[in-house]
Image (tube, rainbow over the protein chains, first blue to last red):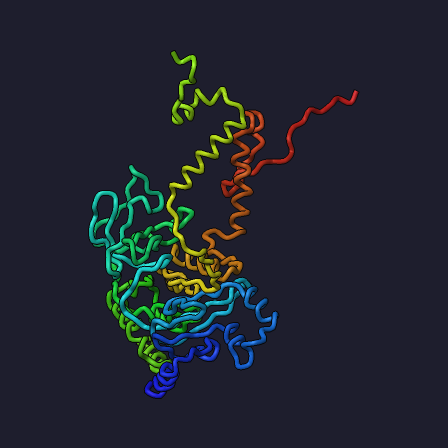
Length: 275
Length: 160
């Protein structure tokens, strides 16, 4: 890490912005500015005076670039606000210029609109439930935001229940609000999570790693024994298996797999499969 | 007493609706314009040069959903919770925009048995709707299945 940290420090001292393209999958530090590909061409040496029309046309038609978590817009450039690796995703359907974001690690969750999270009901006041999601404030959940709920037909939610829902309002100025239905009014698996099971907390990066489409860990874990897992983007995981021992084994595996190499993991799984 | 000079009506009075009915359209327009002028003069405005909003190509989003294709958060393995397994297929298929392969649902009753039962079912239900005379046509099999006999007694026309 010392060598990697040394290189960006020099460029920061020189106050030169680097092209985002050259820094992909490398560690970036807060305070760095990144140039988007089109600007980098125009700012090359000797390109100041003559700007061929072609470049301008390309810049206009490139569409919108999305700067994701860890980046902010600073004029025409991207400013890094978190330390981590810079990632890029090409636009799939052709519209837009792709997404840049910083793959960082943290334990503290900040509510974001659209995220599915696991919350714990802490209070019931009038028409709303107060749900603790691990952020700075408890989120509010209206009793009508469940599938099939009406004024007469209230959902069966008690204090201390686990709720799987998504945020509809989540910004730094307002109290976060969550719901357990989607825009069509269907539950889609959201709502009160059933009885028993175990809830534990992990880092946010691990959740994203486990939910990646090609995650081997989950595929291997799923072969051990029947189980049910719910992942919340706020770092909370709920697991349930047939016996308490199996549930505890599962929880320990998921917590430990963040720091294991592939070989160590395979060893552990093979030992488990034998026993 | 007011014959010599016209009673000067105030502006507010002239602006009232009943006074405007008698006016012709031109005077009306003029009055409206004057009104607008007064209103716009009273409005405050900043004496700054017009700032053009720069068209920005960069959109800020704080959500990871756009960045990475993440799977659906609820999962169930080896049949622990069948509803969740169904949901998994649905939601992950939506994400990938693929067509979900129709999984063969485990049948409680096989197709052959279903066909057999249905054959006899036709007889039973048919018997219910048949008239009393036709009910005799339905014969009971050894197994207790009711099968209709195709040959129905029709009217035989005499040959002569």
